[in-house]
Image 1 (spheres, one colour):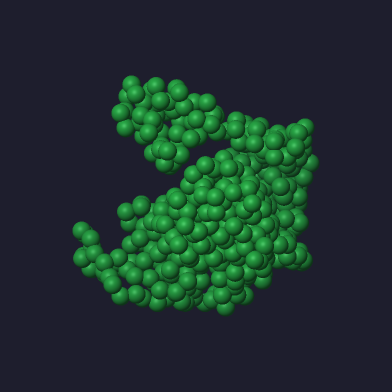
Image 2 (image 1 turned 90 degrees about the horizontal axis):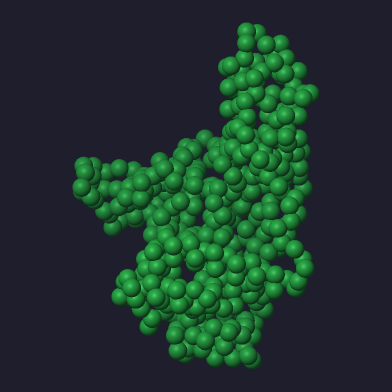
Amino acid sequence: MRVTRVTNQVGALDGARAARLRVIAGPDVGLELALPPIGVVIGADRGCDVPLTDPSVSSRHCTVSPTAAGFVVADLGSKNGTSIDGVTVQKVIAPPGVILRLGHTLVQLLPADEVVEIPPSTRDHVGALWGDSPGMRAVFAILERAAHSDASVLFLGESGTGKELAARAVHDESPRKDGPFVVFDCGAATESLVESDLFGHVRGAFTGAAGDRQGAFAAAHGGTLFLDEIGDLPLPLQPKLLRMLEAGEVIPVGSRKPERFDVRVVAATHRDVFGEVGRGGFRGDLYYRLAVVEVHLPPLRQRKEDLARLVGIFLERVGARALVSTIGGPALLRLAGYHWPGNVRELRNVITRAVALAGPDPTTFAELPILLRPTAPAAEAEVTAKADRPFHDAKQAVVDRFEREYLTDLLRQSAGNLSAAARLAGLERKFLYKLLERTGLRQKSATSAEAGDPDDRDE
């Protein structure tokens, strides 16, 4: 099956037509190239299609070929093996976003970016989301199309940008509008109970399970399940969620019998999930399954032309409709000059508070006591990377500086104990040793290890 990801930011992705490879850890970190349909050979030999400088990589380590079903990965008898999620593989079909470990190098396989042009919507709102700015009209255009399908949708954006409102709008304009809309907050649920809350449990499944309980999927049968803060979903539960998305069935905790549910899943997070995939904190196959349609909601500071309309809406909601016609002047300019770290949610609270604290019967918007938190405006136009050297040299300098600063602080937090440092950083100790050696911090850490934890001595 071919899955296309549509997004209002980076276009559609189709693993069957084009793909790319990038090195996310190891001596060659930052290397990225397109994968030809015929595939590539990866290894330490300079004659390979993708030559790596990692000494733990074999001369001809493995092959990778993009297909309609994913990526065919085949080990070529390498000394250290080719592994996925800690499992050594010989020949497999891997999903988009998968990360291969070749020695001390991590390689991620991804679909290639393709741009899909979708004309902006002519509407100024979808559901309870309002806006006339170009960014919001682009969002509305995606929502209008996505609503009429059963495709999974992933909403990305800062807190307060309206991700739940967007999810509700998709549900309300879909053929499932008469079914339930169930919200499940992955960030608020405790890790020990999140599986039961999502998939349900049967009597006796664990201490305190006095009876059967339906989970969020069962409650959303025939409708839409909104998984808020999906980036906080524990990694061990992600394969089970993927199974539900792929097969439409779950196994309640304590049961062996799968149950099928007709549920459309939409999700949201403020996290950089794509970056988490690269760091191993989120499964790539689950990301691509959730992000069939990906919608980036712009922060309020990027759509300030919507301020007056939004202020008017919030004034009407708190019973100050008479002030709407007076919005403007210095008071509105003051709002436009604010950074809005809390986005539309913060604007709503500011207007609600202003009306509550206003004197008796204010006649103009300018009379309202607008209280804003002191904050420095974001330097969005500031250039932090100078084009004063070749791209790869400049990028490597930034990576080197980051690694040294990160590892220095890591050693400080772990008091020089490399076992503790590796656990804190989520790295294998041998890989951590290599990083310390490359950044010139190895001698310092080895000395500390010999004085502290005997397990941290050089191997």
